[in-house]
Length: 113
Length: 112
Image 1: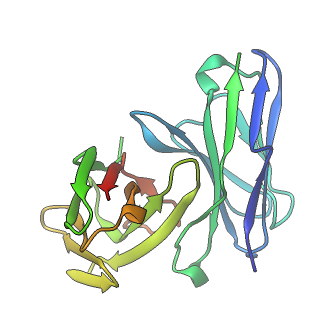
Image 2: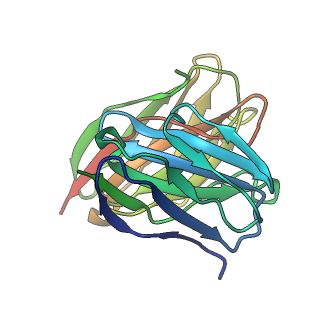
């Protein structure tokens, strides 16, 4: 079955370190997204991509970057981790064939100390 | 922010009762979707209603959409303890870029 996987599922890192969260989907979807989920804010879009070599900023993109070198992967990098980036991160994918229904990964819990 | 709003934020009911959650949004939409999230898990798609539809059913789920009021509701009938989860509405703007905007969610607890 097609799926979307995130790694690591849980990570603790120190302030100032660079962190990369991996996302891999086997749906062959063109669209991929990164959201963060925080109490009181729901899900907020960080970055998104509509295809290889395409990346776009979402509403909370400061301090984050993504790259899309192939269809399957959209890694999310925190350039210099801050305590405010402690959150749960969800990767997701979709395309027109799925009616733009979004399929989510299981989440990556990141704690910045 | 274009983020939608949901109410109530939390809902606690007994098994067998109906649960109704409401969602309001701010922009013109192409469609509106509802997602479910079990504790510690990712979101799972439940149902999609298009902007030209007023009501849609899927099993024990009933979704309504009122585009004049920019609002939608999700009704879960004959609730079960296994329905305990958070429920989110999400929508595309009229440009249908594939990017979804999520509401803040309703946390539903169904007591056995």
